[in-house]
Length: 477
Image 1 (cartoon, rainbow, N blue to C red):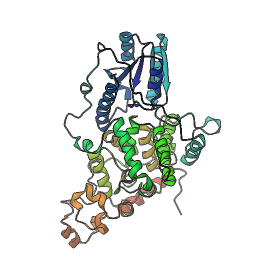
Image 2: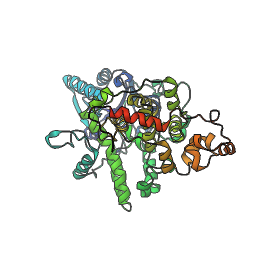
Image 3: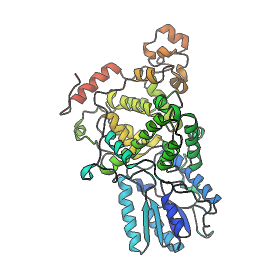
Image 4: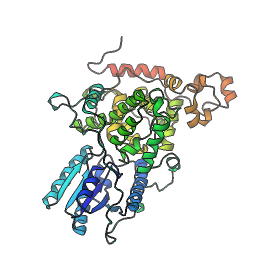
């Protein structure tokens, strides 16, 4: 009895429970259905589509090496699955679950429809250590603060068993039609993706290689370096996790195998569980991608958008070096260091007082790891309206953040070469540098690099007043 294994955000063969079960019961037909309409208000952004193209190519190569191949179709998922069932006489359909609100609704509908046709349908967890409903407070209530959630996950256990990668797979009939991946038109029509190609290797092999490098070169100092954008101090596994090219169970086991670094290992695993927490919140609070978790923020006095200022923020032309370096790194590579993400988000939501959803949408289109759960959690955390959020009076000062986490200015110099000649003491605040220093560095503000679009001190005071206006908010003493 043939089974359809429906790949989505689980583009790997190792530790893939739906695939493992499908292979256990008989012949398997690997399927990917490209359904651009399924994302509703959150269709995949440009950077995500680029990654998906290359990840599908990598998955197809891995299947081919094992004697199988990926069957690609385009259109509404239910229609395509019914069509494939008719073409193959499959009696079973298996997939790994997703947790976006629309995915849950869509999957439930598809499952009912297929079961109504007499098909067996099974779904599994490949994306998380624990599914959002498995870790809850007393009374099945969700956690809304990270630390108790982290403790609950630790108590449940992080080191979970893995499933093997198949060495061989049954062949798929040559008569079964498939679309070439190129026809999905996921790549940009105007080739802006050279930076992505330079920095990333999508696919399961790329994920495992990146994990191996991280364990060998970075994990030992992760606790000390993870906030340093000027150093290679983080794993950069987030896009691989998002597309399911590697799973969290695999990462946990690999990290635990690096036993000489227990402190750094726990620090890293804590960050991995933040990802779990984000999915936990999205599942229990499905309105949060577009609405604040803290309902008081529905009445927050956000500023009216200024198109020129917003464009300056988006393209790294704010005149504030750490922010601009981060935004240019994002534009070039599809990724940004998490510390810098917080700083750039703080400037948008607190110094400019622009709604957090404006930033969420921009990151959604430009990040290769654009994940609805993580993106929502991160932006609402910085804006102060989400779970376990930063207090409203925590406004990141990009100058102080730069001097602390990029002390020599190496990160800024990498992404803002026009400031490369400035000494470390001035590189994070060029508008305050003495004219002779600017002249020696070959920097003319307003020509080579912009003046700041916002006064950091004055805008901080305005933000504090706006946040304090919320009912129940209290100014710090």
